[in-house]
Amino acid sequence: MVDKGIGDYFISDADDQGVEDDDLLGAPVVVPVNAPRQQPAPRPAPAPAAPAPAQQRAYVAPAPAVSARPHATARPVSREDALAEALDELMANDADIQAAALVSLDGFTMASALPPGMQADRVGAMSAAILGLGERAAAELGRGHLSQVFIEGDNGYVLLIAAGDRAVLTAMADPAAKLGLVLYDMKATADRIGQILR
Image 1 (cartoon, rainbow, N blue to C red):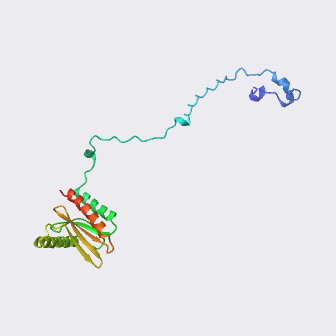
Image 2: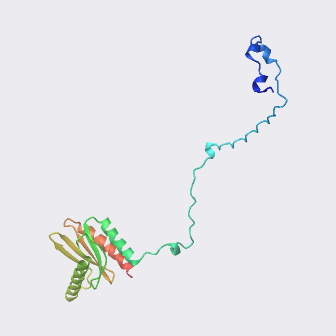
Image 3: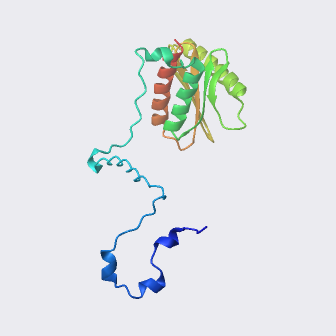
C-alpha cells in the first residue's frame, strides 16, 4: 500500500528543474479527494473601541450618606474629654505655661497637664488650700469675691483663676513669661471650662 502523504502532491526537485517560476503561476492546484475540508476560521469579534481621552474620567469615591441627625450617630464627647481638651489647647497655645491643672473647690484634681514627676494630687491639694486662704483674705479685707491668685517665685509663677463656681484653673509659668498673655489665655480657658461644668 502506498503512503499518500502531503509530500506526494508537491513537485519534486527533479521535476522542478525544467519548470520556470512563471509556469507555476498558472498551474492548477491539486487537492486530494479524501482530504478533510477545512472550515474557514471564524473571524474574531472586533474589540470595543477605547474611549477618547477626553471622555475618560478619574474614579471618584461616592460621598458617604449624610444623616439627617448627625448628632445621633456621633459619639458624644464626655465632660472629662472636654476638660482635658481645654487644658491641652491652653498648653499648646501658650508656650510660657509649663503645667496646668483643673481643681475642684475641695482639692480634687479634675484634669491635669503636668510634667513628669509632678503629682496631680499634690497640685490639687495645694491649689485648694491657696484658693481657700485667698477667698478668706479677700472677704476679710473687704475685697469682694476672689477672681485670681498670683504667686511669684524664683523659678516662675503660680496662677490660679476661678473656672465657674465649682473649680479653679491652676497654671505654672516660666520666669520669663509674658504674664499679660498668660492671664488672657487662662481667663479664656477658665470661661470655657465654666461652660463645660454647668
